[in-house]
Amino acid sequence: MRFVFYTHSLVSDWNHGNAHFLRGVMRDLVRRGHEALALEPADAWSRQNLLAQQGAGAVERFASDFPMLRSEQYGAGFDHEAALAEADVVVVHEWTEPALVARIGELRRDGAPWTLLFHDTHHRAVSAEGDIAGLELEHYDAILAFGETLRERYLRAGWGKQVFTWHEAADDALFHPMPEIERTRDLIWIGNWGDDERTAEIASFLVEPARQLKLTGTVRGVRYPESALAALNAAGLDYGGWIANADAPRAFAQHRVTVHIPRRPYVQNLPGIPTIRMFEALACGIPLISAPWSDAEGLFRAGTDFLFARDGADMQRLLAEVLADRDRAAALAVAGLETIQARHTCRHRVDELLAILGQHGTARVSNQLAPGEAAS
Image: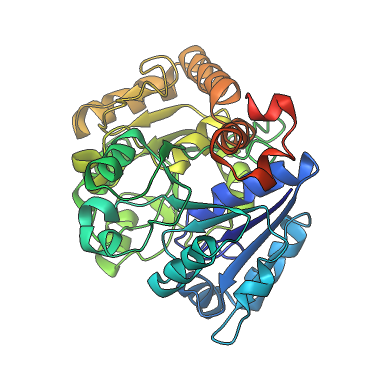
């Protein structure tokens, strides 16, 4: 089958975690013999920021990191009808411009034979409800929401015909343990600043414990204000700025432990949704300690796959214990990796996607699905 994904960007992962997941999904679709194409706006803010801050080389390396993936840019004069003429499945991400969301829906309304899905991987349904409520989704065949609480929000609001939970996951072709690399530093955190959505949490669960324990450590991510950079420096943490997602597994492998610090809108309003970095870190076999969030869907085995820290003092205690106890650290790493490999890879998500298409896809799709795919 031919899959077309409308995304904010496939090429740039600057402050854009959905690119991580979509790359893994497209990679697995291609591995199974399907075609996959991403369409992204030429003026995408992620790509523009990456070019401005890192130069053309950061964009150009996408082709070498992901040679199996295809992405095309579109602008004002792009012929979307022609681009979708041979599509079997069209997936539109929620960052797509509302007018284009509506235009694609109208093509489906007017008889386009492909299956049309809307994909939401953000908290705007609760933090900027009007943005999502204003989208014209009535002609979409189904909604893919990256958590059960977000699915329920769509259902309560009457947005869309069918709504399915489709969590993000780790691309295990990229994210896997690298035991050959020596772990030379204590702590790593890979995460963006996040519009002050976790300012206090970063201070409490990362900066202060590292300072108190005098850890060697690394922070990677973007949009850190000067005050944050000063705090990291005072704690003895090295700030390395943006990191290409393809380089993140090696970075994890060079450190003994990592932390997970979710953004406040997810903790408060969308329980059960971890960021994709948690899946990716555990896939790399690094012990992980998390700030509080509610694993309402039982995605992991808390206390076995990772540890929960109740507050900053608890994080400091747990970091000290894990760094001092190699056996405990190893057990956490093995268990976390086990859960990812059993439940949370992009291969699993493609299985889920094909099963949804088997139930709700158009005849054009159902006629092409193998019996095993439709029943996954």
